[in-house]
Length: 444
Image (cartoon, rainbow, N blue to C red):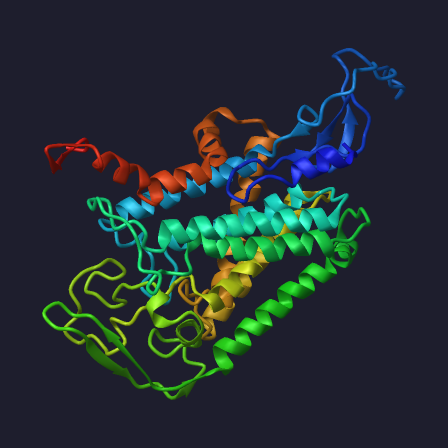
């Protein structure tokens, strides 16, 4: 499919909307894409074709529309659906099963894979969406607008506009709105990765080996620069002592003093990630939840020996940690590029990233989701690569779509499910209909 209109339509897909597709190459009608080998093979009826290697001429067919000429990469929808289901599971069951809930600080649990999986999927989808870019300026404009829309939706959903499932009030003081969040992080990673794919992708069609690295060398270089920049800020920024105030029931404000005066600390109170968010975004615009409650990361009473930083706002989707999230998206982008023997080309880097991640963790660079450390990014990207390879083999290579039909549907409606279920918009809507008193609502 080589016309510009089809390619531009391809790039119109939304980041979490599940509408990315694997397009056919500029081959004649009557050929289908061999996804594993990365080549086109002629398809003829059974018994057609001679045994001496002489193939019958292809039967002429009417030109197909761009929509019919595209073939979905179903495994990507299934992977997205599994991630959505995992997100709902850990959100609802995490309070009862702490083992699957987010790790309070160092370490990785099941819940800590959700965000990197989404970022990885966005990267793969972008490689498919921008497979043909006839007008780079127009594609850039649309990518920027799409990222802005996603960021604004995140501000509404996670900025504090809604006051909880059982509250029938809404609205937010703009001086206290939370600026960062899940969709905001995805929007940042999306726009950087999209620009890399639009402007820095090589034009040569390569199959494997060093040619593949050469073709994508600029994108890989950007990822390396981002990673080095993050590590420079995390381990090289001096964090001074700092103070914050919070409102306490029964009094106006209470002040806390946090003693730091360190450089390169990765603890909860004196890390560069939190300091940069406090300086740039403002402490009043960060996620507010005690970091060391008895049943952390859930809300609850503070520990008796709670340190002074415990009640300080800290955003797990902050600015510096979102810089490393770009790397996860760029890794997914490389998995989405067309090349031969893709299963092996996915398995080798996946295992390599996992080995490197555990090695870094062993030598002191621990996996940490709130800081989005390098070891955490590599471990979760490696796990995403392995899972994607397995789903691809099951669904797209061997055609076992029926067992994953529900996951495929959830993957194609991921953003809708996230907004209605994960952000509690549907429960809030249900609670809005009641009989005489708010407690007599439809949920009861």
